[in-house]
Length: 334
Image (cartoon, rainbow, N blue to C red):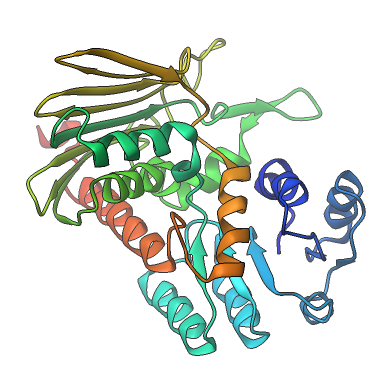
């Protein structure tokens, strides 16, 4: 449901390539977009009316529509007794997210959040190293994604420079911590198997939105570890040749784990030496849909994030963003 960019490059190719899944139907209220995406992916039955879509006889639905429509889509899926894999955020706020979780529970169907970072070979290897104690007990996590969100400005068909609609939309929805930081928040909870009980956040404003475009989030976990997440949309957002930075650093009592997307470096350094393994992209749609196919057969979520995982990560991201806004100091106040 929803044939936007993420469905086109991520979900649909993975569904088509995954044993046990069949692309039974597509839905998008925009007929032109629907026809374009359907043509790229084998022309499955395609519908611009939701009820006709569900009449196609579905077992499960992947929801990749814009966030304001997630709850409506989830309610329809529950009414038609379909399992759901929903893109983040689960819904627009906590009330809607709780409603989404409750309606799926009442229907007796599974609800998963599309935190695709969990399924990267990098994330799975780090999870395995933590469970095996390769670098001892993890005490500190430093998760960073600094990028330009494809630039704040772009040229229109007339050659005029305008603000990018993508930039504007994501900043209005909450900025980088809400849009991207939820992945790192989820990874920290999942890797550690531990909840967050204290949050402190600060922001920086390079652009001029209410939400900060560069955010620093500090999370204390219940068992003593600390996670720092740094997210940016303005790291080179107006430069000709932007150079994004994406890395994970985990410090343990017996060593460190390091991942750098530049060169796909993944290593664990400890007293016996350095373990190096092949790195990979931070995303893996194929891995996520393989897990989804397995869950549909077995009922076991495996590593799939539940609906409540999506709610918790978004709660933390929104709280952090709101805290940064509330504590913002303007030059006139100094």
